[in-house]
Image 1 (cartoon, rainbow, N blue to C red):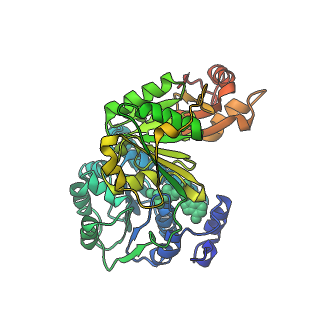
Image 2: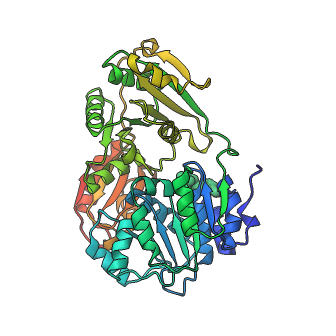
Image 3: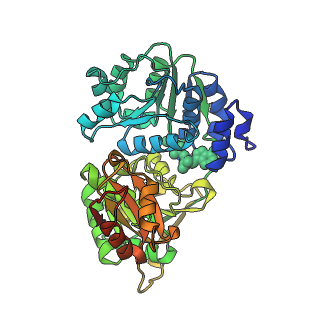
Length: 456
Ligand code: ADP
Ligand code: MG
Protein backbone atom coordinates (compact mmCIF):
# COMPACT_ATOMS: atom_id res chain seq x y z
CA UNK A 1 0.00 0.00 0.00
CA UNK A 2 1.27 3.47 -0.80
CA UNK A 3 2.18 5.60 2.15
CA UNK A 4 -0.52 8.10 3.04
CA UNK A 5 0.11 11.51 4.56
CA UNK A 6 -1.51 12.63 7.81
CA UNK A 7 -2.77 15.72 5.99
CA UNK A 8 -5.42 13.59 4.26
CA UNK A 9 -7.12 13.30 7.65
CA UNK A 10 -9.49 15.93 9.08
CA UNK A 11 -7.02 16.93 11.80
CA UNK A 12 -6.42 20.40 13.21
CA UNK A 13 -3.67 22.57 11.75
CA UNK A 14 -1.83 22.42 15.06
CA UNK A 15 -1.91 18.65 15.19
CA UNK A 16 -0.66 18.32 11.61
CA UNK A 17 2.09 20.80 12.30
CA UNK A 18 3.13 18.94 15.42
CA UNK A 19 3.17 15.59 13.62
CA UNK A 20 5.51 17.09 11.10
CA UNK A 21 7.71 18.48 13.84
CA UNK A 22 8.08 15.16 15.60
CA UNK A 23 9.01 13.54 12.31
CA UNK A 24 5.84 11.62 11.56
CA UNK A 25 5.72 12.21 7.83
CA UNK A 26 3.46 9.41 6.72
CA UNK A 27 1.04 7.09 8.41
CA UNK A 28 2.06 3.56 9.19
CA UNK A 29 -0.30 0.92 7.70
CA UNK A 30 -2.24 0.46 10.93
CA UNK A 31 -2.71 4.22 11.19
CA UNK A 32 -3.81 4.51 7.55
CA UNK A 33 -6.44 1.88 8.02
CA UNK A 34 -7.72 2.64 11.48
CA UNK A 35 -7.52 6.42 11.89
CA UNK A 36 -10.32 7.38 9.50
CA UNK A 37 -12.73 5.13 11.43
CA UNK A 38 -11.39 6.18 14.80
CA UNK A 39 -11.85 9.84 13.91
CA UNK A 40 -15.44 9.10 12.90
CA UNK A 41 -16.05 7.77 16.39
CA UNK A 42 -16.45 4.12 15.39
CA UNK A 43 -15.40 1.20 17.54
CA UNK A 44 -12.30 -0.45 16.15
CA UNK A 45 -10.53 -3.70 16.90
CA UNK A 46 -7.07 -3.67 15.39
CA UNK A 47 -4.29 -6.15 15.14
CA UNK A 48 -0.80 -5.14 14.14
CA UNK A 49 2.61 -6.31 15.13
CA UNK A 50 4.77 -4.67 17.78
CA UNK A 51 6.36 -1.42 16.71
CA UNK A 52 3.80 -0.62 14.05
CA UNK A 53 2.57 2.63 15.59
CA UNK A 54 -0.57 1.53 17.37
CA UNK A 55 -0.14 4.12 20.11
CA UNK A 56 -0.33 7.04 17.71
CA UNK A 57 -3.25 5.36 15.93
CA UNK A 58 -5.44 5.64 19.01
CA UNK A 59 -3.53 8.60 20.47
CA UNK A 60 -4.29 10.92 17.57
CA UNK A 61 -7.93 9.83 17.67
CA UNK A 62 -8.21 10.47 21.39
CA UNK A 63 -6.61 13.91 21.15
CA UNK A 64 -8.79 14.86 18.19
CA UNK A 65 -11.93 14.33 20.25
CA UNK A 66 -10.66 15.95 23.40
CA UNK A 67 -12.20 19.14 24.77
CA UNK A 68 -9.37 20.61 26.74
CA UNK A 69 -11.61 23.27 28.34
CA UNK A 70 -13.72 20.55 29.89
CA UNK A 71 -11.54 19.43 32.75
CA UNK A 72 -12.91 15.91 33.18
CA UNK A 73 -11.50 12.49 32.36
CA UNK A 74 -12.56 11.94 28.76
CA UNK A 75 -10.40 8.97 27.87
CA UNK A 76 -9.29 5.93 29.78
CA UNK A 77 -6.45 3.84 28.37
CA UNK A 78 -5.86 0.45 29.94
CA UNK A 79 -2.41 -1.12 29.56
CA UNK A 80 -0.96 -4.37 30.90
CA UNK A 81 2.10 -2.98 32.65
CA UNK A 82 3.46 0.12 34.20
CA UNK A 83 6.29 0.35 31.67
CA UNK A 84 3.80 0.26 28.87
CA UNK A 85 1.57 2.84 30.53
CA UNK A 86 4.56 5.13 30.88
CA UNK A 87 5.41 4.66 27.21
CA UNK A 88 1.87 5.36 26.11
CA UNK A 89 1.68 8.48 28.28
CA UNK A 90 5.00 9.65 26.89
CA UNK A 91 3.91 9.19 23.29
CA UNK A 92 0.60 10.93 24.02
CA UNK A 93 2.38 13.89 25.55
CA UNK A 94 4.55 14.14 22.47
CA UNK A 95 1.48 14.02 20.23
CA UNK A 96 -0.26 16.58 22.45
CA UNK A 97 2.51 19.14 22.43
CA UNK A 98 0.31 21.58 20.55
CA UNK A 99 -2.56 21.32 23.03
CA UNK A 100 -2.10 23.70 25.93
CA UNK A 101 -2.94 22.75 29.49
CA UNK A 102 -3.68 19.14 28.68
CA UNK A 103 -3.28 16.81 31.63
CA UNK A 104 -2.39 13.17 31.08
CA UNK A 105 -2.15 11.06 34.22
CA UNK A 106 -0.78 7.55 34.72
CA UNK A 107 -2.25 5.37 37.47
CA UNK A 108 -0.43 2.08 37.87
CA UNK A 109 0.02 -0.58 40.47
CA UNK A 110 3.42 -1.04 42.08
CA UNK A 111 3.52 2.65 42.97
CA UNK A 112 2.26 4.40 46.08
CA UNK A 113 -1.48 4.96 46.17
CA UNK A 114 -1.50 8.13 48.27
CA UNK A 115 0.28 10.44 45.83
CA UNK A 116 -2.08 9.26 43.08
CA UNK A 117 -4.98 10.58 45.14
CA UNK A 118 -3.28 13.95 45.18
CA UNK A 119 -2.77 13.91 41.43
CA UNK A 120 -6.36 12.89 40.85
CA UNK A 121 -7.60 15.69 43.03
CA UNK A 122 -5.99 18.06 40.54
CA UNK A 123 -7.98 16.47 37.72
CA UNK A 124 -6.97 15.08 34.32
CA UNK A 125 -8.20 14.78 30.75
CA UNK A 126 -6.70 11.40 29.96
CA UNK A 127 -5.92 8.58 32.35
CA UNK A 128 -3.52 5.79 31.39
CA UNK A 129 -3.06 2.85 33.70
CA UNK A 130 -3.20 -0.77 34.66
CA UNK A 131 -6.63 -2.34 35.24
CA UNK A 132 -6.10 -3.28 38.89
CA UNK A 133 -5.09 0.16 40.06
CA UNK A 134 -7.71 1.94 37.97
CA UNK A 135 -10.35 -0.29 39.52
CA UNK A 136 -9.12 0.50 43.00
CA UNK A 137 -9.54 4.22 42.33
CA UNK A 138 -12.97 3.69 40.86
CA UNK A 139 -14.08 1.76 43.92
CA UNK A 140 -12.71 4.36 46.27
CA UNK A 141 -14.38 7.03 44.15
CA UNK A 142 -11.12 8.89 43.76
CA UNK A 143 -11.62 8.53 40.01
CA UNK A 144 -14.86 9.24 38.18
CA UNK A 145 -15.38 8.17 34.60
CA UNK A 146 -18.90 9.52 34.18
CA UNK A 147 -17.70 11.86 31.42
CA UNK A 148 -15.50 9.32 29.71
CA UNK A 149 -16.09 9.16 25.96
CA UNK A 150 -13.34 6.86 24.76
CA UNK A 151 -12.07 3.63 26.27
CA UNK A 152 -8.87 2.13 24.88
CA UNK A 153 -7.52 -1.34 25.60
CA UNK A 154 -3.89 -1.44 24.54
CA UNK A 155 -2.10 -4.78 24.23
CA UNK A 156 -5.38 -6.44 25.06
CA UNK A 157 -3.91 -9.89 24.40
CA UNK A 158 -1.29 -9.29 27.04
CA UNK A 159 -3.82 -7.99 29.54
CA UNK A 160 -5.82 -11.16 29.12
CA UNK A 161 -2.65 -13.26 29.37
CA UNK A 162 -1.87 -11.61 32.65
CA UNK A 163 -5.29 -12.40 34.01
CA UNK A 164 -6.76 -8.91 33.91
CA UNK A 165 -10.07 -9.88 32.33
CA UNK A 166 -11.85 -9.81 35.68
CA UNK A 167 -10.64 -6.30 36.46
CA UNK A 168 -11.47 -5.11 32.94
CA UNK A 169 -15.00 -6.40 33.32
CA UNK A 170 -15.37 -4.64 36.61
CA UNK A 171 -14.00 -1.38 35.21
CA UNK A 172 -16.70 -1.57 32.54
CA UNK A 173 -19.30 -1.24 35.30
CA UNK A 174 -18.00 2.28 35.99
CA UNK A 175 -17.93 3.70 32.47
CA UNK A 176 -20.75 5.14 30.35
CA UNK A 177 -22.51 2.70 28.04
CA UNK A 178 -22.50 5.29 25.30
CA UNK A 179 -18.84 5.46 24.34
CA UNK A 180 -16.23 4.67 21.73
CA UNK A 181 -14.18 1.57 22.48
CA UNK A 182 -10.86 0.87 20.77
CA UNK A 183 -9.10 -2.43 21.20
CA UNK A 184 -5.50 -3.04 20.13
CA UNK A 185 -3.68 -6.31 20.17
CA UNK A 186 -0.59 -7.91 18.65
CA UNK A 187 -2.42 -11.21 18.26
CA UNK A 188 -6.02 -12.31 17.78
CA UNK A 189 -7.57 -15.28 19.48
CA UNK A 190 -11.02 -16.34 20.64
CA UNK A 191 -10.62 -14.62 23.96
CA UNK A 192 -9.92 -11.32 22.22
CA UNK A 193 -12.89 -11.73 19.92
CA UNK A 194 -15.05 -12.59 22.95
CA UNK A 195 -14.09 -9.49 24.82
CA UNK A 196 -14.55 -7.38 21.71
CA UNK A 197 -18.06 -8.78 21.27
CA UNK A 198 -18.78 -7.97 24.89
CA UNK A 199 -17.48 -4.44 25.09
CA UNK A 200 -17.68 -3.07 21.55
CA UNK A 201 -20.51 -2.17 19.18
CA UNK A 202 -20.31 -3.00 15.46
CA UNK A 203 -16.56 -2.90 15.75
CA UNK A 204 -14.60 -2.48 12.55
CA UNK A 205 -11.92 -5.12 12.42
CA UNK A 206 -8.53 -4.19 11.03
CA UNK A 207 -5.59 -6.47 10.48
CA UNK A 208 -2.43 -5.19 8.93
CA UNK A 209 -0.23 -8.12 9.68
CA UNK A 210 -0.28 -9.69 6.24
CA UNK A 211 0.01 -6.49 4.22
CA UNK A 212 2.97 -5.03 6.04
CA UNK A 213 6.44 -5.40 4.71
CA UNK A 214 8.09 -7.93 6.95
CA UNK A 215 10.94 -6.69 9.08
CA UNK A 216 14.27 -7.63 7.68
CA UNK A 217 15.33 -10.16 10.24
CA UNK A 218 18.17 -12.57 9.67
CA UNK A 219 17.46 -15.78 11.53
CA UNK A 220 20.16 -18.21 12.51
CA UNK A 221 20.05 -21.32 14.65
CA UNK A 222 23.18 -22.62 16.32
CA UNK A 223 23.62 -26.09 17.66
CA UNK A 224 25.94 -25.96 20.69
CA UNK A 225 27.48 -28.68 22.84
CA UNK A 226 25.91 -29.42 26.21
CA UNK A 227 26.59 -26.65 28.71
CA UNK A 228 28.24 -24.45 26.10
CA UNK A 229 25.50 -21.94 25.44
CA UNK A 230 27.14 -19.06 27.26
CA UNK A 231 30.43 -19.65 25.46
CA UNK A 232 28.52 -19.67 22.17
CA UNK A 233 26.78 -16.46 23.17
CA UNK A 234 30.11 -14.73 23.70
CA UNK A 235 31.31 -15.99 20.31
CA UNK A 236 28.18 -14.68 18.65
CA UNK A 237 28.68 -11.25 20.15
CA UNK A 238 32.33 -11.15 19.17
CA UNK A 239 31.64 -12.31 15.61
CA UNK A 240 28.66 -10.09 14.88
CA UNK A 241 29.47 -7.12 17.15
CA UNK A 242 25.92 -5.90 17.72
CA UNK A 243 25.38 -2.42 19.18
CA UNK A 244 23.00 -3.92 21.69
CA UNK A 245 21.14 -7.15 22.27
CA UNK A 246 18.42 -8.80 24.28
CA UNK A 247 19.07 -12.37 25.37
CA UNK A 248 15.88 -14.25 26.19
CA UNK A 249 15.88 -17.14 28.58
CA UNK A 250 13.13 -19.01 30.33
CA UNK A 251 13.93 -18.63 34.01
CA UNK A 252 14.92 -15.91 36.44
CA UNK A 253 17.83 -17.90 37.81
CA UNK A 254 19.20 -18.37 34.32
CA UNK A 255 18.86 -14.67 33.56
CA UNK A 256 20.95 -13.74 36.60
CA UNK A 257 23.58 -16.37 35.85
CA UNK A 258 23.97 -15.46 32.20
CA UNK A 259 24.30 -11.76 33.00
CA UNK A 260 26.94 -12.52 35.61
CA UNK A 261 28.97 -14.72 33.25
CA UNK A 262 28.82 -12.11 30.49
CA UNK A 263 30.02 -9.43 32.91
CA UNK A 264 32.96 -11.66 33.86
CA UNK A 265 33.81 -11.85 30.15
CA UNK A 266 33.80 -8.05 29.84
CA UNK A 267 30.46 -7.93 28.11
CA UNK A 268 28.31 -5.33 29.75
CA UNK A 269 25.04 -7.03 30.68
CA UNK A 270 22.13 -6.66 33.10
CA UNK A 271 19.39 -9.12 33.98
CA UNK A 272 15.73 -8.26 34.20
CA UNK A 273 12.97 -10.49 35.51
CA UNK A 274 9.86 -10.44 37.61
CA UNK A 275 11.67 -10.81 40.93
CA UNK A 276 13.25 -7.38 40.75
CA UNK A 277 11.71 -4.57 42.73
CA UNK A 278 9.96 -1.97 40.62
CA UNK A 279 12.75 0.56 41.20
CA UNK A 280 15.44 -1.89 40.15
CA UNK A 281 13.48 -2.90 37.08
CA UNK A 282 13.17 0.68 36.08
CA UNK A 283 16.90 1.25 36.60
CA UNK A 284 17.64 -1.65 34.26
CA UNK A 285 15.14 -0.69 31.57
CA UNK A 286 16.30 2.91 31.57
CA UNK A 287 19.94 1.92 31.28
CA UNK A 288 19.28 -0.40 28.38
CA UNK A 289 17.14 2.11 26.54
CA UNK A 290 19.60 4.98 27.01
CA UNK A 291 22.61 2.95 25.90
CA UNK A 292 24.19 2.59 29.34
CA UNK A 293 23.93 -1.17 29.07
CA UNK A 294 24.70 -3.25 25.98
CA UNK A 295 23.02 -6.54 26.75
CA UNK A 296 19.76 -7.16 28.52
CA UNK A 297 19.19 -10.72 29.72
CA UNK A 298 15.46 -11.10 30.13
CA UNK A 299 12.57 -13.42 30.72
CA UNK A 300 9.63 -12.86 28.36
CA UNK A 301 7.35 -11.23 30.88
CA UNK A 302 10.00 -8.76 31.97
CA UNK A 303 10.78 -7.56 28.46
CA UNK A 304 7.22 -7.17 27.27
CA UNK A 305 6.28 -3.71 26.13
CA UNK A 306 9.84 -2.47 26.08
CA UNK A 307 10.19 -0.13 23.12
CA UNK A 308 13.77 0.01 21.98
CA UNK A 309 14.06 1.68 18.62
CA UNK A 310 17.39 0.38 17.53
CA UNK A 311 17.84 -3.16 18.70
CA UNK A 312 20.51 -4.94 16.67
CA UNK A 313 20.19 -8.45 17.98
CA UNK A 314 17.90 -10.84 19.76
CA UNK A 315 19.24 -14.13 21.06
CA UNK A 316 17.03 -16.97 22.18
CA UNK A 317 19.26 -18.57 24.76
CA UNK A 318 16.45 -21.07 25.22
CA UNK A 319 14.11 -22.17 22.49
CA UNK A 320 10.83 -20.35 23.12
CA UNK A 321 7.83 -22.38 24.28
CA UNK A 322 5.69 -21.39 21.33
CA UNK A 323 5.95 -20.00 17.85
CA UNK A 324 4.07 -16.95 19.01
CA UNK A 325 6.69 -16.20 21.64
CA UNK A 326 9.42 -16.71 19.04
CA UNK A 327 7.78 -14.26 16.65
CA UNK A 328 7.24 -11.76 19.39
CA UNK A 329 10.82 -12.00 20.62
CA UNK A 330 12.50 -11.66 17.25
CA UNK A 331 10.05 -8.95 16.15
CA UNK A 332 11.85 -6.57 18.50
CA UNK A 333 14.82 -6.36 16.21
CA UNK A 334 14.89 -5.10 12.64
CA UNK A 335 12.36 -2.40 13.36
CA UNK A 336 11.71 0.56 11.12
CA UNK A 337 13.34 -1.07 8.14
CA UNK A 338 16.72 -1.68 9.78
CA UNK A 339 18.16 -5.16 9.50
CA UNK A 340 17.99 -7.23 12.64
CA UNK A 341 19.73 -10.39 13.78
CA UNK A 342 17.78 -13.12 15.54
CA UNK A 343 19.81 -16.05 16.80
CA UNK A 344 18.62 -19.15 18.61
CA UNK A 345 20.79 -21.59 20.55
CA UNK A 346 19.96 -25.23 21.07
CA UNK A 347 21.66 -28.28 22.47
CA UNK A 348 21.66 -31.58 20.54
CA UNK A 349 18.63 -32.92 22.43
CA UNK A 350 16.63 -29.83 21.43
CA UNK A 351 17.31 -30.29 17.73
CA UNK A 352 13.78 -31.42 17.03
CA UNK A 353 12.23 -28.42 18.72
CA UNK A 354 14.58 -26.13 16.82
CA UNK A 355 13.68 -27.81 13.57
CA UNK A 356 10.09 -26.65 13.96
CA UNK A 357 11.38 -23.18 13.09
CA UNK A 358 13.17 -24.39 9.97
CA UNK A 359 11.10 -22.46 7.48
CA UNK A 360 13.62 -22.25 4.69
CA UNK A 361 14.78 -18.73 5.47
CA UNK A 362 16.53 -19.54 8.75
CA UNK A 363 20.12 -20.69 8.61
CA UNK A 364 21.08 -23.70 10.72
CA UNK A 365 24.69 -24.27 11.62
CA UNK A 366 27.01 -25.58 14.24
CA UNK A 367 28.30 -23.03 16.75
CA UNK A 368 31.80 -24.48 16.46
CA UNK A 369 31.97 -22.81 13.04
CA UNK A 370 32.04 -19.40 14.69
CA UNK A 371 35.46 -17.79 14.83
CA UNK A 372 37.19 -17.22 18.14
CA UNK A 373 37.81 -13.51 18.57
CA UNK A 374 40.32 -12.53 21.21
CA UNK A 375 40.16 -9.47 23.39
CA UNK A 376 36.54 -8.70 22.58
CA UNK A 377 34.71 -6.38 24.94
CA UNK A 378 31.29 -4.76 24.89
CA UNK A 379 31.26 -1.49 26.74
CA UNK A 380 28.33 0.88 26.84
CA UNK A 381 28.44 4.22 25.10
CA UNK A 382 26.91 5.97 28.10
CA UNK A 383 26.69 5.81 31.87
CA UNK A 384 23.54 6.81 33.72
CA UNK A 385 23.33 9.40 36.46
CA UNK A 386 20.36 9.33 38.80
CA UNK A 387 19.01 12.50 40.35
CA UNK A 388 16.82 12.15 43.38
CA UNK A 389 14.21 14.54 42.12
CA UNK A 390 11.59 14.38 39.41
CA UNK A 391 8.25 15.67 38.22
CA UNK A 392 7.06 16.18 41.78
CA UNK A 393 9.96 18.58 42.19
CA UNK A 394 8.94 20.25 38.94
CA UNK A 395 12.12 19.06 37.24
CA UNK A 396 11.97 18.88 33.47
CA UNK A 397 14.43 17.51 30.96
CA UNK A 398 15.41 21.05 30.07
CA UNK A 399 16.40 21.80 33.67
CA UNK A 400 18.71 18.81 33.81
CA UNK A 401 20.20 19.66 30.45
CA UNK A 402 20.70 23.23 31.60
CA UNK A 403 22.42 22.18 34.82
CA UNK A 404 24.84 19.97 32.91
CA UNK A 405 25.63 22.22 29.99
CA UNK A 406 25.62 25.63 31.63
CA UNK A 407 28.85 27.54 32.43
CA UNK A 408 31.79 25.58 31.05
CA UNK A 409 29.83 22.39 31.36
CA UNK A 410 29.27 19.51 29.01
CA UNK A 411 28.23 19.78 25.41
CA UNK A 412 24.74 18.77 24.44
CA UNK A 413 26.13 15.97 22.31
CA UNK A 414 27.70 14.37 25.38
CA UNK A 415 24.31 13.97 26.97
CA UNK A 416 21.93 11.21 25.95
CA UNK A 417 18.40 10.36 26.89
CA UNK A 418 16.82 12.06 29.89
CA UNK A 419 13.96 10.30 31.65
CA UNK A 420 12.05 12.17 34.30
CA UNK A 421 9.87 10.13 36.64
CA UNK A 422 7.82 11.34 39.57
CA UNK A 423 10.58 11.31 42.15
CA UNK A 424 13.69 10.43 40.17
CA UNK A 425 15.37 11.46 36.98
CA UNK A 426 17.87 9.60 34.84
CA UNK A 427 20.33 11.13 32.46
CA UNK A 428 22.66 9.27 30.12
CA UNK A 429 26.17 10.73 29.85
CA UNK A 430 28.91 9.71 27.41
CA UNK A 431 31.08 7.33 29.45
CA UNK A 432 34.22 9.46 29.19
CA UNK A 433 32.37 12.46 30.66
CA UNK A 434 30.69 10.77 33.58
CA UNK A 435 32.95 12.12 36.34
CA UNK A 436 32.67 15.66 35.06
CA UNK A 437 28.89 15.37 34.83
CA UNK A 438 28.65 13.87 38.29
CA UNK A 439 30.71 16.67 39.84
CA UNK A 440 28.71 19.29 38.04
CA UNK A 441 25.38 17.98 39.23
CA UNK A 442 26.57 17.17 42.73
CA UNK A 443 27.96 20.64 43.31
CA UNK A 444 25.41 22.51 41.30
CA UNK A 445 21.71 23.15 41.61
CA UNK A 446 18.70 22.30 39.53
CA UNK A 447 15.93 24.87 39.62
CA UNK A 448 17.80 26.53 42.45
CA UNK A 449 17.77 23.41 44.59
CA UNK A 450 20.33 20.79 45.54
CA UNK A 451 19.54 17.15 44.80
CA UNK A 452 21.30 13.90 45.65
CA UNK A 453 23.00 12.43 42.62
CA UNK A 454 24.56 9.04 42.04
CA UNK A 455 26.00 6.92 39.27
CA UNK A 456 24.16 3.73 38.34
P1 ADP B 1 3.15 -0.52 18.84
O1 ADP B 1 2.30 -0.02 19.98
O2 ADP B 1 2.36 -0.82 17.62
O3 ADP B 1 4.05 -1.64 19.25
P2 ADP B 1 4.33 2.09 19.00
O4 ADP B 1 3.07 2.83 19.03
O5 ADP B 1 5.06 1.95 20.30
O6 ADP B 1 4.12 0.65 18.39
O7 ADP B 1 5.27 2.77 17.90
C1 ADP B 1 6.58 2.32 17.63
C2 ADP B 1 7.48 3.50 17.29
O8 ADP B 1 7.10 4.09 16.04
C3 ADP B 1 7.38 4.60 18.32
O9 ADP B 1 8.69 4.98 18.66
C4 ADP B 1 6.65 5.74 17.62
O10 ADP B 1 7.09 7.00 18.11
C5 ADP B 1 6.98 5.52 16.16
N1 ADP B 1 5.92 5.96 15.20
C6 ADP B 1 4.58 5.75 15.31
N2 ADP B 1 3.92 6.27 14.25
C7 ADP B 1 4.85 6.80 13.43
C8 ADP B 1 4.79 7.48 12.16
N3 ADP B 1 3.64 7.68 11.53
N4 ADP B 1 5.96 7.89 11.63
C9 ADP B 1 7.13 7.68 12.27
N5 ADP B 1 7.26 7.05 13.45
C10 ADP B 1 6.14 6.60 14.04
MG1 MG C 1 1.85 -0.59 21.78
